[in-house]
Image (cartoon, rainbow, N blue to C red; front, side, top):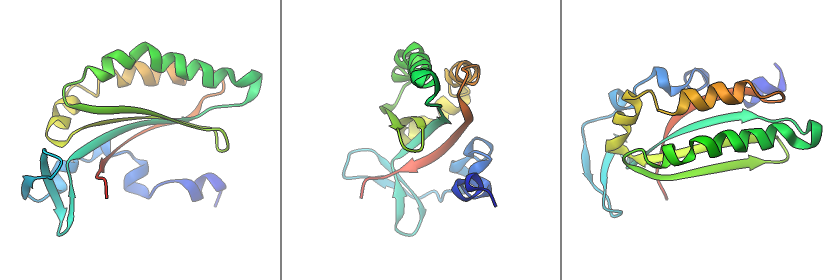
Length: 150
């Protein structure tokens, strides 16, 4: 198995949750959280009120990290549109200089996520197309998951 294989998510995860509707896997148990929003319980004791969409890729240190610079510019081009999505709680950018990760995590109120999903996660397609065209960018992927502070 390659190093990349060791770092990959399990099969359902690596195919991307975009193929799996997380709300179909959930029980109908919902209650108010201490944080003020509606909570969904996946299983006994496992609840969430936030759903996140992650865009991730690897960048190259070649040419003075130009692929990283270009990925940031691509994010800057869509950032105001992402922040304007109804229900957005936060947009975070993660950069790792050791493993050369560039990630954008957009967190939404759980009950608003379906609306964004129905729109195709706009402007995801535009962003993904742009970064795939950047020399030095590789392993461009998306994933949906839930978040809950502990």
